[in-house]
Each structure stands twice: as C-alpha cells, then as structure tokens.
Amino acid sequence: MADVHDKATRSKNMRAIGTRDTAIEKRLALLLESAGFTYTVQDATLPGRPDFVVADYQCVIFTHGCFWHHHDCYLFKVPATRTEFWLEKIGKNVTRDERDMTLLIEQGWRVLVVWECALRGRMKLSDEALTARLEEWICGGNTAAQIDTQGITSSLRRG
Image 1 (cartoon, rainbow, N blue to C red):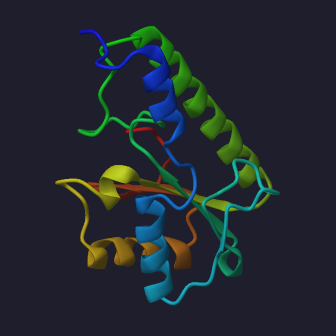
Image 2: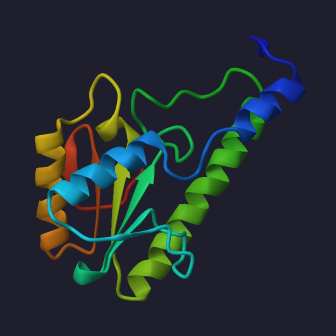
C-alpha cells in the first residue's frame, strides 16, 4: 500500500510530532500530582532524559509511545510502506532505551516505563488503577518495572 502523502508532506508531518508535553505525559503528570508526588521533567543530565524524575524516591519514569518504542500491543502496527526503514528506526529507539535504562540502574536509579496503551486508547487503565500502580511502584523497592494495559510487571521487557 502506497503512502497517501508524498515524501515531503510525510516528513513535515513526522517532524511535527512532539517529544515534550505530549498528551500521555500530561495525563501522567496529573496523576503524579494528584497522588502527592513532586517531580522534575526531562532531566537532561540523566541518560535518556527521563520524562519524570521523582528524586525523593530515587526513581525515574518514562512514558513510551507504543509505536515509537515497539510495544507488543494493539497500538503497534508495522508500517505498510517503507517497512524496513521504520523497523530499523524503531529498533534503534529500543536499543537506545535499553542502554539508557541500564545506565540509570547502574547509577542507582529505579526505572519505570509507562506505555502509551495504559494511558490512552480503548484498553487504557482508569485513573484510579494507574494511580494505584504508580504509588505501588514508586513507594516500593523494585528496581525496574513497566505499566501497560495488563497492569504492572516487574521487568522492562518490551511487550
């Protein structure tokens, strides 16, 4: 299936996708605030520039888009056009994510990934369920975990 846009239009559209203050980041920020956590955002001094740093609990939180970070869920679809290009690009994101999370853990940080599918879409978790999972992990002692539509898992596997 051919792309409905020419290369220049597609490129312009892709450049317009924000990397900061996204809808999923805004939702997570509201949940963290409502639970009483203080945090900083996008700390450039840390590997991977985590979306949220909750220093009081020595933890960082990433919000990962299911497409851009290759989550095995209903929101991820392999593009029908330029498939090889996209799989290579997404693969590099995944490799970089794994490297950054390893570095953060080595520096003594705890790492949580909250997947886009947990925050939006037809299978998203409720605010109450998300807040409970966030509090459970932040106040707990696990080094690494992820939250998706299934809840919380004590690992950082992709899907």
